[in-house]
Length: 60
Length: 150
Image (cartoon, rainbow over all chains, first blue to last red; front, side, top):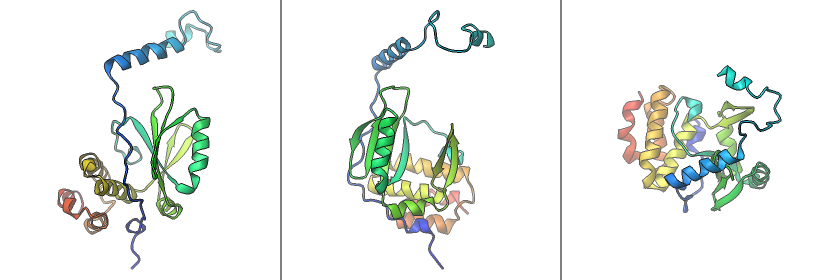
């Protein structure tokens, strides 16, 4: 009987792992939120959208 | 994991590609705005300038291994993309391989294996799961999982 393919996988030998993901401090997190907010649309600005500016908020 | 009904918190997205496709993958990710962070002989990590976009970790395998992993993959629709996800036995193989290579990963990958088996009963029987653990020199851990299969 043929062995299932998953018992024949030739996976690479791992000698070096990627480092753990960066840990974000609360200060970095807050700075990121401020930076992202600065890049986004603010009330009163032209969003170049077909939607009337208030319509989305009225739907909420 | 999500393709098989297991949701977990993660800060990145893992992809696995054939090593013959590294160049085209790099081109695509760079075009999408990603920058290569770290690269080893079998992994690379890609970061996007926006922290709202998850990191991408990529593992490279031999093209013939990649072909085997495609045999019974499942398609997962994410937005407009149809992603190919390895089968549960393949995913468990990858996780056992990781556990074998790095015992520090036993907690995390072991939990993923248990969740996959609990959420998808009958996908492997006891002897099949035992053979998988043996293949990856993880037989020592099998008793912790044997109650999850019949």
